[in-house]
Amino acid sequence: MTLPQILRICAMLAVLALSTLTHAQSVTVLYKRSSEQSMPRTDTAVQSALTAFERELIDRGVEVIQPDAKTYAVLDKAPDTIVTFSVDAGLSLLVDAIKTSRPNPGTENAFAEVRLRARLFHGRQVLSSLAGSGQVGYRLGSEDKAYEVAADRAVKKLVDTVMAKLEQAPRTSGPAKLDSVPELNAAVLPKPAKTWGLLVGVSNFSNVRKLNPKAGVDDLNGVKGDVALVKKTLKELNVPESQLKVLTDGEASTAALRSALRELGAKTGADDLVVFYLASHGMPKQEGISGFGYPVTFDTRFSDKDSIIDFEELQALLKALPAKRVLWIADTCHSGGATLGLPVVEISSRGVRIGKPVTGLSTRAATTGTDEKDFAVLSSAKEDQVALEDGENGLFTLMLANGLRNTKGAESIYRVYKSHLEAQVPERSRQLDPGYSQQPSFARSGKGDAIRF
Image 1 (cartoon, one colour):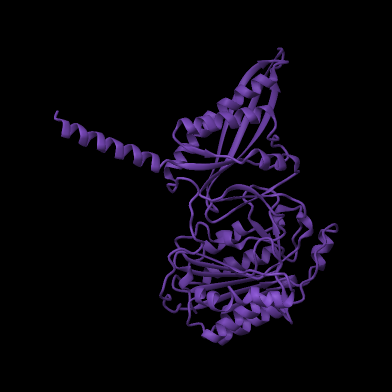
Image 2 (cartoon, helix red, strand yellow):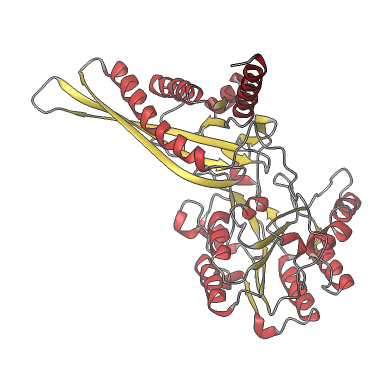
């Protein structure tokens, strides 16, 4: 073999090696208790499992990003935490562990088991729920070592599953730095065949206060006016009243909301547009590990999961609609009291950090996993902000209605956001409340930014 041939082969190998390093998967790993049965992170079995988990992933070529000691120190002191994901979060694994033991009757031996559970995210999208378990027999009195061995076995099973899922996941090298609305469509979509509206608003929370005596949930006086304004605006944009459904106060129960969304599935066609308007208090989800919030319906009982319809479920119901175009508008004021003081973990391109207490909802999460649809979400305020009222209406809804009227529904929804909401809502909020700046947000998947009426 000649020297030039050897040099060419070496160059090819170097390029291949560089390509392999460049495309290595990177994943943020965070231990987050998801139930009362989950062990604290400081448990020796959990520490053993996390160490083994990191080692196994690194050995298989995965870069592991973990919170720093300061972040974990704050979380370890808290009774509960909320995990939120920025749109640029990349791949993340939220892990928790449960350990159990059972005696071996008639002997001095017992069996120890460690069950690891994890959820794999890409940005805000849940890619998969994973699990692995390990068991070992031990002599009574040596359970600590037994749990460590069981944890190590559970890790090996979990890592095999994780690696299989990572092979199917989008390739990332470090958290992806993406704009929330990349590569905007310049043109608007064709006019929909039909536009359907589901308008939901809760202003009277007397029933919620009755169901949750310890929760301070104030009434929202402007919501009724907001729902009426949105309905009037849609009718001015030539949406027939027969294609509009309104649920307010006592009509806006959790069951009624589920039923109304399913009813739309029997009416809408692929070329239709569905407008889902939601105005109520918003709550962060304290149980579970996704960090997605939920709206407070007329019969929400905070301690009863069956009474809660969260944003993941709402997203799933919207995704199931035959209509390929969906616009979700959320004008929400935050209820606040339930989570004051709860630490928040945000996973983003900046890594894992402690954020401010969240007392509201994050509708931006709603666009995850909807690439098969042209899906857009407009929300009235950031996750840690309240939504102000302006006269008899919510500030955000009032400006949105004015924008739709001024453009007569012919502009894309993103252009309406840019020209009538993005700068105007903060400016008006500072006039209403000096020193405060309410910031609306926009997100989309598919060609959701190009939706028009």
